[in-house]
Length: 66
Image 1 (cartoon, rainbow, N blue to C red):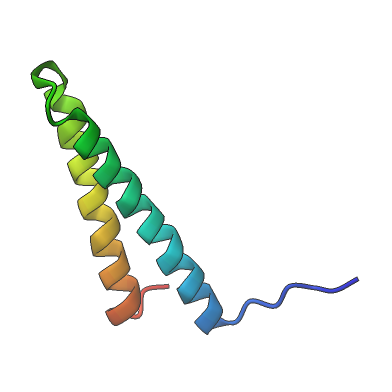
Image 2: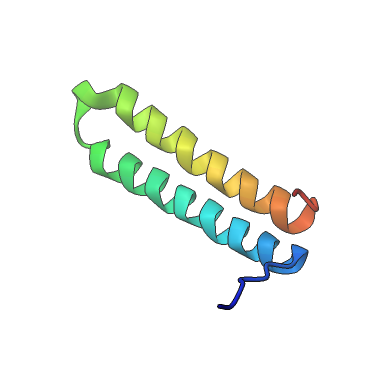
């Protein structure tokens, strides 16, 4: 049986990938709801989720987060 060893370096890379997926999800939510005026709250939520993902990527990569 092998164990999965995740070093601090690998953990940071995995976290960056997760944050990138959050950013992609937020951007896709935002783009889907842009034409629908009645769904403005969902558009704003998608934009915020995308922005948060991008900021977390920056914090993880350059801010030594984690």
